[in-house]
Length: 123
Image (cartoon, rainbow, N blue to C red; front, side):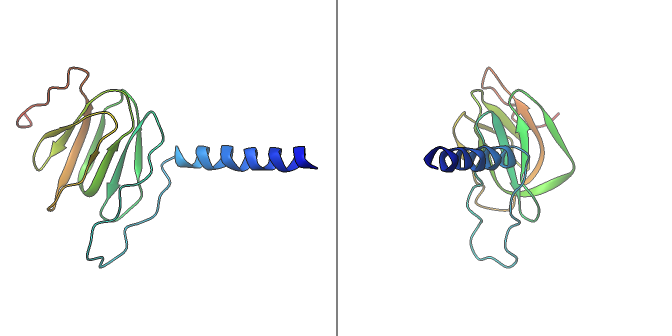
């Protein structure tokens, strides 16, 4: 009996982890006065939370272009390499860090940056 409950608990945790890596998330509440908290992001991914929509989970080492660009609430870097956040203003995001812009931010691309250097302007 105890072994069955343990197996069921492990299966539930495995399913939850699998769902977390598929890019599922909740939408930002409409009319919220404060930004939505940064999404949970599985290890090995960079996760982007748009103002309205679902989290996009980008595998470590991958580039992702947003066409059309998206307004974002946050970017979470759960990888082991730095990334460049290319958009309204270009910035870098170190491994384990969260980027939460304080004003409207439009994201065009996420680019891995093993050297940690990002362009000052897109071009």
